[in-house]
Length: 141
Image 1 (spheres, rainbow, N blue to C red):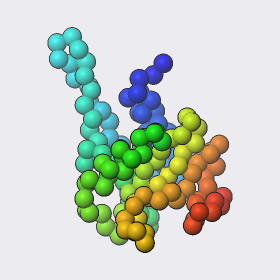
Image 2: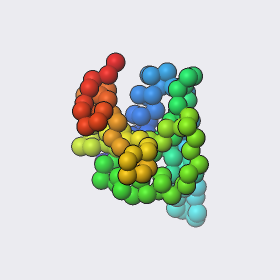
Image 3: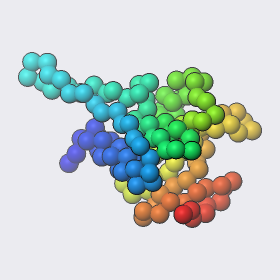
Image 4: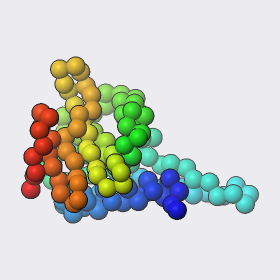
């Protein structure tokens, strides 16, 4: 059975491969392993201590992505918001959450009537990408 770190790394790789398949160039943060005595420890190298993936594609927003499981949504949103207001109009801050080991829900940090918050904008289910617009789901591309 994989450790949580191995599972998380697998999810990050899955997102990376999906985005590469969409034509994005990817920078991914990898954990560093080091030894102290006979123990092997692991240190996160996340960008800004929270971002797992940066995805770039010509004429598209730069995607700053945190990958996690659905049960950790509030925690991950808080960490992303904690970075501060450093994002520009050409950035897309996204939270990709894995549910039931099969469905991805994609949340984007954006301005709403209530202020800036994470809004579900898409999901990937059975390999198909669905955009979510104003509470409605539509299959895309």
